[in-house]
Length: 95
Image (cartoon, rainbow, N blue to C red; front, side, top):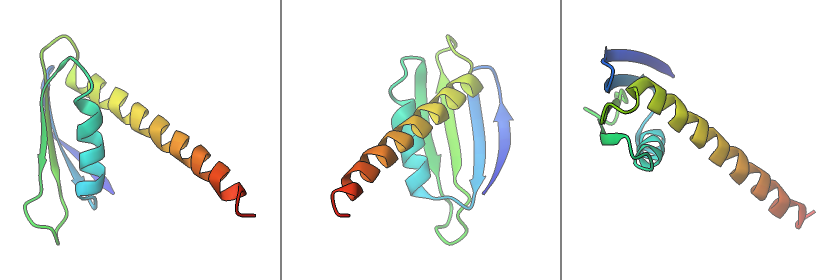
C-alpha cells in the first residue's frame, strides 16, 4: 500500500491509496461520518484493476482534515482489535 497526499488544506484533504479498494475506503468513510466536524467524505476508483482509490474529505473548519483522518484511523484500528479479540474468544469454543 502506498499513500500520497494529493491536496491538503486546513479543512480539506485528498489522498490516493494505491493497492487498496472499496473495503478499506468504505470502512474509513463509515467512521468519518460519525464525526460532527465532517461536511463531506467520499472516494472514487477510476478502474477496479488499477486500484488507486482517491479519498476526499472536508470538515466544517472546527477540526483540521488531517486530524480527523488520524482520529478515524485510530477508531478503525480499535474496532479491528475489538473484533479480533472477540473472534479469538469464539475460536476458543472450538478447541
